[in-house]
Image 1: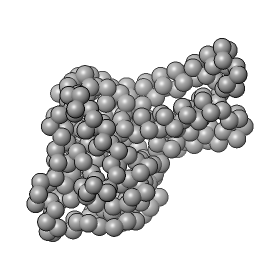
Image 2: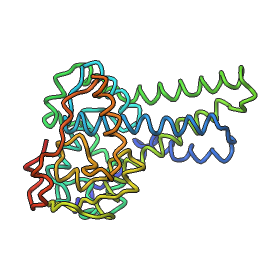
Image 3: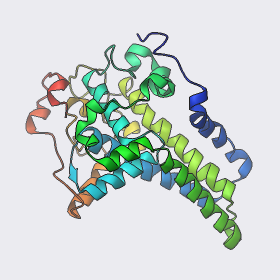
Length: 294
């Protein structure tokens, strides 16, 4: 178990995070519009791809290759989710894989409980610093280091853009009955809230509920529902068994939307060298997941 100091939550430092939750409740007062709802769902899916394909499968695991410009696009997409910078995210995730569901794993629901693994650790200042020793391969890119330092500018910029679009709708297309406040609340805040908690379920629920196809040293589970709402991240037991794979749905019936999009991008030659599980991965033999770390 973590000490009290390691469990200390910084309320003041998390005012923006808390505010997203409170402002999202305003959907009941600002009214409904189809444009705002479509914006909400679109930004949820697009930014989820930034997390799954960018922060997770590319920056954390280097599961495929791409150009430097598309690498930066992935970093910007991930940053727009308001989940800190690409180096921080990758460093924290690599640490998780090395110590999954042990005393050193910060967000293990097995060790520290559901709520801490889901959201508590996110609000703890102890874990907000970037361990560059974990991501020396990424820290050599100055644009990524810059973005990691100023990551907050991306979601703020997105919130401004969404609000301005709402103003334009309000002024020039009033028949759509879409306001700037609706776009801010639905399009940015609620979208970000959904993105937060669908992402967080992989740390919490995906280590508690579901089935296990492989014998790993942690409690990771495969969960079809979590896979649907996270574009394929819910095949978490598969992922912990062989983290180097770009594809997390190891079988044809395991829907992995992120994999499908990356496959399409590979046909367009935007990404390449997509790593897949070798035949031995399917042998269902007990292994230590550290053998397949990156």
